[in-house]
Structures are given as structure tokens and as C-alpha cells.
Image (cartoon, rainbow, N blue to C red; front, side, top):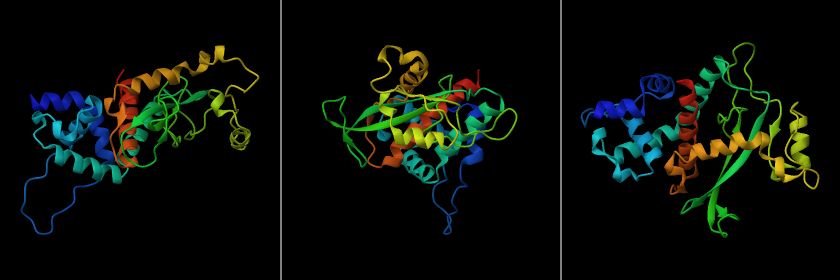
Length: 250
């Protein structure tokens, strides 16, 4: 049962990619101690926590490890930026297959209620309660490219990190943003304030709104319980990786 659970949450192709980015296990100079739990089982346990929204102490005993062990390994891998590297590796696989559409992208943000932690502020969509924002950049098909776009492999030619046109709502219509994008050869296409109607904003932006709903599959993102911002960002990267991995396996 444990093996089936691990394979369902962290299938073999995802596990193979993960082995490229996970750091080697630290050596114990004094020797002895308990045998270190396998990375495959811990990866599946972390994905279970991310997708189910349970606490670390509620981790199913079917994984054969404690919630303390899973959290400790999660913290180690977060510090080593494993989740961002894994997301980029999955994007590389998609880019090499030609499954990333760079002609235009869409940008938006999702507000999450934050119960604790730094880098929070009043959420105007939740009666001023503390919250955090997840900023999304997706390709034309809705695959999350993250907050900053890393250099991603292409089917042919050099790596890409710039879309043709970014589409956003009127909250992104600022002169300094237009100048910044123009300096990088990117056409600025957010809706213009006092010029364009809000009725057709969803024509190109519906993909990012759909991706925001996909993020809800990672129930750990429904509310922010993490004190450390890097832990909350790690769960965001895990959710983006799982979304992209589903496309990779189609």
C-alpha cells in the first residue's frame, strides 16, 4: 500500500527529474543513528501535505515516516531551492517538446488569507484582513511560468525567458512598467485605464484565471499557515510544478 501511495503522488518520471536537483544526503561524522528515510517517500509525503492541506503532524502513517522528518527535509530542500529548480526542470522538458506557447502570456495575482508570518498586509478583497499575494505569469495555454521567468529550453534555437506580449488587468497599467517592458523588447498589453472597457478583459486573461483555480488543487495554499515566506513560496512552486507535470504526462 505504501509503495502504491508513493507512486501515485510522486510518479516515476517526476521522481527521475527530482533526482537531478535534490542535494546529496549529509554525512554523519559520528556514525550510527537511525537510517535516513528515502527521498522518494519523503517527496511523496511533502506532495501529500501540499495537496491535502493537512498539517505535518497529520501526515498519514502509510508513508513510513513522521511529520517531523518530512518537515525537516522540506526545510532542507527549500533552503537549497530544490522546488524552484524542479519547476524549471519540468518547464525545460515542456519547452524542449514545444509545449510552451511564448507568443503571449497573461499575468494576474491571487490573494490568500495569512494567519501568520512575515511579508503580509491588509487584503482589500477580504475586509482588510492580513493576506499574501501569489503573482502568476502563465503562457498562452495557462502553464505557470512563475513570478520571474527563468531561461527555458526551446524545441529549436536558444533558451527563452521573454514572451511576445503580456496581458493583464488595469492594475498593471503603469508608465514605469511600460518603459521596463519596452526596454526588453516586450510589447505592453495590459488593459489601459480610462481607455479600454473591462468587458473584454477575459479574452486573453482567462487562461491565468483558470490556472489560479488549478492552484486551489494545492489546498495548502488556501490559507497561509507558514511563518517563513520561503516556505509559502515553496508550496507555490510545488503547485506550479504539479500543474506543469500533468501537461508533461499527456
